[in-house]
Length: 328
Ligand code: G3P
Ligand code: CA
Image (cartoon, rainbow, N blue to C red):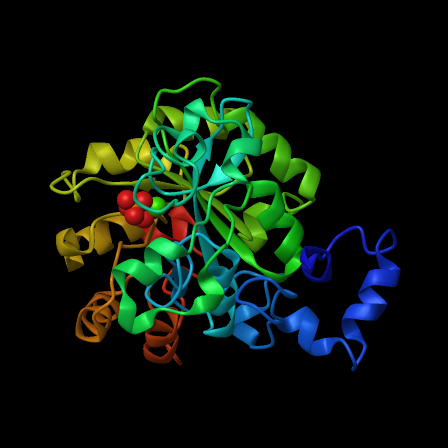
């Protein structure tokens, strides 16, 4: 069934694709959460071939209020809800495969054989991770939002995410720095280069890489200078510190502060340096509006549909920003 959803290698699977679009088997291809074809995005805000022209909706771990985080079900739903970006948190397996999972350990969100589905991701092979069910925890934790179709959802590799959505989505990828070997930066840049998504990426911003680690972002910047980067900030980081923002502006296009730390002075100081401000993680509509009124350039949310409605009609604050123009 996974073949029905792949956006690449179409010639090799054309017979399967023909089957997928056939009326008789349409239901089979589209059945099961996250198991069918990726949704086609149709709104102008979701035209992933150009930079968004409104404050951006970043689907935090996908539409993770309604579906199990970092599954194709959560990503598909996020796109249907109008998200501009799908967020990925990266971990790396013992055999060097980039996978999409928030935690460094499996215990919270994986179910399956203990030897494969508990403990640190970095100690497992990709074959072991493929044994794990990434949806049942959601049904156990949120019975009011449970869906039998979530049972058995698998952990996506980053390559599978790019293969599924291709040019039809934007990606906001967090390099998690667990200190585990091998490092993630070079494999990630290699994967993105192979995908073709780095062509014109500084203009399209189809891919953004984020991290709490300046060292990690500086390494990515060295490997691929055109790749837009966002420096995540921890709670209480000196958000308007000029020297800190000057440093960040050397390699990044934006900052990602905790939403509670954002204020107008911080937004102004960041914008003076052409740094976008993308707070995390905002699910309350009143807080979303408050942040939009402060001039933020988008935000991470578990509820993309809510933010997509609230940002409607608002301009992208940093459109065509250059440091010279910002200083005037
Ligand atoms: O990446 C922005 C936000 O997601 C950071 O927090 O812990 O959800 O990755 P976390
Ligand atoms: Ca994250």
